[in-house]
Structure formats: C-alpha cells, structure tokens
Image (cartoon, rainbow, N blue to C red):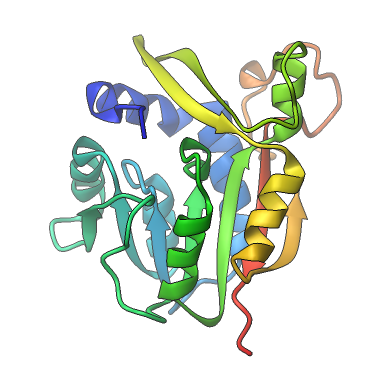
Length: 233
C-alpha cells in the first residue's frame, strides 16, 4: 500500500458523502447486490470513514469493519459509535478475525490498491462461513484502456492519479489488472463467481453530477462489481 489516506481523510470523506461515484453509484450498487442483510454478520474490508457500513447497519446487519488508515477508522467510529467493532488492519496481511466468522464480506474499491490478490482473497475466504459471500467493486478494467490507450492493458501495472476532494488534493496509487486476471484470482482462491454487474447510476442522481454528453443513457463505464460465493463443499 502506497496511498496515504491519513493526509486527506476528512476531505475524502466529505467529498464522498455526495459525490457521483460514491454516493450515487458505488454504494447504491453494493447495497443492491447485498440485498436483504437483516441479521447477517458483515465485514466491511477497507471501510474508510464508514458510509457503506452505516447503510448496512441501518438495514439490520451486524457490521464489523477495518481500514489501513487510522484517520479513516476514527472517522468511521464517529459515524458508527464508540462501541462499533472497527480496527486498523491491512487487507494485505493476516486479518484479526476467526475462521468462518462472517456471512458476507464487502470490499468496495480497495482490492485495486494491492499488487497481490492471492493472500488477501485467501484470508477473506478463511473468515467467511461456508456459503458466505464476498461482494466486490473495483475500477472497470476497460476504463484503464480508455484513459491510457498507449499502455499494455494485459500487464499488471501500478499507476497514480491525483484528485481534488472537497477542495483538497490527494494522490491515489493503484494496480491495474485485466479482467481475466481478476476472475482467475477469484476462482484460484476457491470462490464461485455468481454475479458480474455493470449497474446504472442511482435513479435519484442529481443531473448536474452526471458526465457531460451522457444523454439518455442510464449507465457509464467506471466500476465493475462481483458477487462471489465461498462454496460449502
């Protein structure tokens, strides 16, 4: 991990409360794929400041979360309450949870910070009960092809992009991998791919937030979503 969210955690969190890509796209899509979570034990991997965890908790789930950034975890604690089970932990290392502990793991926009997926996916598989789900969102690999047409789509490649979050600049560093490398990593870890989704943006998205030239289209290429199952036998 090379991206240091601690330096712009509050600005990033404020931006994501109302941003197109988070508030009106990634989070609604993750919640839609999760479905009825009442009574389910859910681990939010890379929970950030906790907006997805809060939504899942509001729908009746028992939510645990972790993030590599202590500043993000503190913001999540402020959102979810002092008693919330939130920890500073690294998705790229052994997770501080027991075997078969969760019904679902949600990993929204965090796997792409990791060069290696084998270890993290093995750890997620370990903490999921048999039959449990891993719900994932990642940058759509075809967007990399559009944004960087001179680069090799098929190569595992590290790259950085700089954004402005609530008036504050922050640089994020990712690993691009092609689609087949993603699906191979999932199946090599023992997951069954149940859903691959390219969802529309939320119906209540303010028009001024949408990309110019979108016209009447209800979707755009940005993130890719998966629902994976840890087989029971």
